[in-house]
Amino acid sequence: MELINNLGLGFTTVLTFQNLVYSFFGVLLGTLIGVLPGLGPLVAIAVLLPFTFVLDPVSSMIMLAGIFYGAQYGGSTTAILINLPGEASSIVTTLDGHEMAKQGNAGKALATAAIASFFAGCVATVIIGVFAPPLAKLAFQFGPAEYFSLMVCGLIVSVVLASGSLIKALGMMVLGLLLGIIGTDGQTGIQRFTFGVPELADGLNVAAIAMGLFGLGEIIRNLEGPTGGAMQVSKVTSLMPTRADLKAIFAPMVRGTFLGSLLGVLPGGGALLASFSAYALEKKISPTPEKFGKGAIQGVAAPEAANNAGAQTSFIPMLTLGIPSNPVMALMISALVIQGIEPGPAVITQHPELFWGVIASMWVGNLMLLVLNLPLVGLWVKLVSIPYKYLFPTVIVFACIGVYSISNSAIAVVTMAGFGMFGYVLRKLECEAAPMILGFILGPMMEGHMQRALLIGRGDPTVFLREPISAGLLILAATALALVLLPSFRRTRKLALVDDD
Image 1 (cartoon, rainbow, N blue to C red):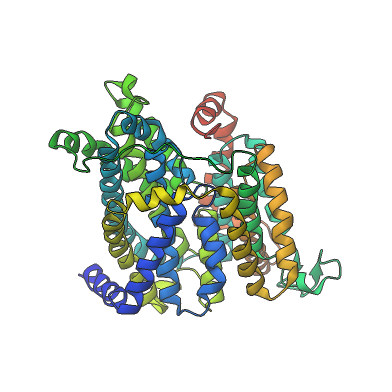
Image 2 (cartoon, rainbow, N blue to C red):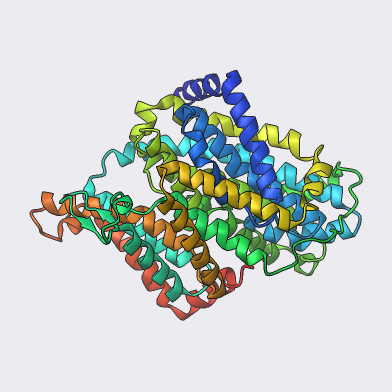
């Protein structure tokens, strides 16, 4: 009954004219961003973050959330029709989705992606509503030691689940932690590594770093390839799957939804890992694995369900613990902080209209996406025909305006440009940037909790082992590191995570 009352509060909040408009604008913009290659939800949120400061916190989060899960929808459209994934998590969809399109089943593939995404979005929203409040109640029992251990565990898991080399992922995490200590120490007030630059007293700008690493870095990489030219678009005929098709996709859709929901909560997991894992699972258990990669409809349903479920359940640790599970959630936390709201378990009790409003907006947004995507397929494909040489300067201009407006400082723009070049170098070196941005966000928080825990324990480091929850989380982190040392686990990790592109 309590859940029903809370959802009633959420729908009352979201079903206002203002919030419906922002929800629609968010999912529409998210779909657009997902369709256009080289962008993605992280770039969109980083660019639009400053423009949400004038909104109230509920409207701001509803719009940003719509952009995030809307991009998961949009990326599948071009992945199916022109073999060009608009969003990273849609890479797997190209394997069978575009093969279906070449066989004259483009409409069926698009409908499958839309149905699987809608189903997964609705189920994941229920999962958030059911499991987030108990997790928040548990978090109220956390002290500084528990929060420190939780963040250590989250960073270790993000490294284990990062694609590519484990050593590189560990190095990127450490680099992020080092960048996070730039600025003023929260306990002593001493400035560290600011080199006399006043603008660095508050530390590096997270939006500038994220925009540079994931936005400008990706743009520079895309400029190496063709920047124009006509796209061969598959013809879309009937959008209605047959009863046999619905029967074939039901089980993969369900498995993808629950696998994606689980991986979305894990640090470093999210939509990308969920989509690859769901595809690998379906291929492994299928009685006809040879059909995968040749137009198997299950190969579209499973990853599309998984990436949307993973995108939405990644809100659970962000809203309940104040811990980002991926770089997009890190920017979401920044948006809450700027709005004067401290992320964590108190959000549910102190700002229930925000928490339940965002959850209810996911149902509304998923319905909007279902209505938007299929009828406007032609429009989305035409947008891809815009030559990239015209598209990328527009993105850069808006990025500069957005980053500058956060602090009214040119240092932020210079920071973005510098990390843009650095992001391009990281791609050349095949280094995963996600552990770095998570380390940068969690580093100062970890340091603050560690200092407070040591003050409570009078400088005794065993304080982290004396608390049962803290000790359990540290044991879990140590177990994850130990597993990586096992040859069998390393081989499995390499097959699952390396060379995702």
